[in-house]
Amino acid sequence: MEWFVITLASGLAGFVDAIVGGGGLVLLPALFATFATAAPATLMGTNKGAAIWGTAIASWQYSQRVQLRWPTLLPAALAGFVGAFAGAWAVTVLSPDFLRKLLPLVLLAVLAYTLVKKDLGQHHAPRLAPRAEWLTASLIGASLGFYDGFFGPGTGSFLVFLLVRVLGYDFLNASASAKVLNVATNIAALILFALKGHVWWHLALPLAVANVLGSLLGTWMALRHGAGFVRGIFLAVVSALILKTGYDAFLR
Image (cartoon, rainbow, N blue to C red):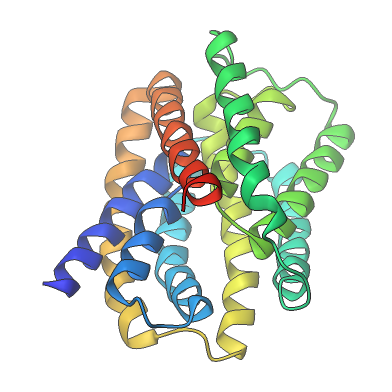
């Protein structure tokens, strides 16, 4: 029964993550509830070992249907990789606890801004010159890569929001682009977890299969229904993140 629950959670995580990020909101709590006595780093590493495959498949699927801006995304992905590795190292010497109370407040601001700006992310209109765009995207990649390695919750949603708000992408193109950056940050974190022996590969591999199936369905729905659908899922995921991180920070 436990295997069925976490496999289902992995599939749902892949589905949500493929559309707008936030899959960790589904799979990580399921892993922590199922393996309550396991080391947190091991569960986080196992989560990365499963989720990276769904993210990679979603990135490939989007690249077949959405015209990704590779001159911008490749340096941003490299910056994200370096940032995530630095963040994962930093968490071994610093505590991320100070972020727990700040995170739900930041997410609340993101939600409020998106609700107020009704047209935000509805139209794809990149607003920066090529050089300024890849420099800005690299800064976003490095910053959120570090955050992903150091703490993690909401990284995909933050990436989507910043690509929409700062670069002028619509939600569909932002989600597709965010997958490329997320693959890079996940690889960096997974390498560190694997080197430290914090991945249960016997569990991560079957969960990866479920994650990929969920990812395929999520990508298909996002491509079929477009930016408006992705925006709706974005609002739902950010709302759920606010509730989850708010509970963890102030009530637990």
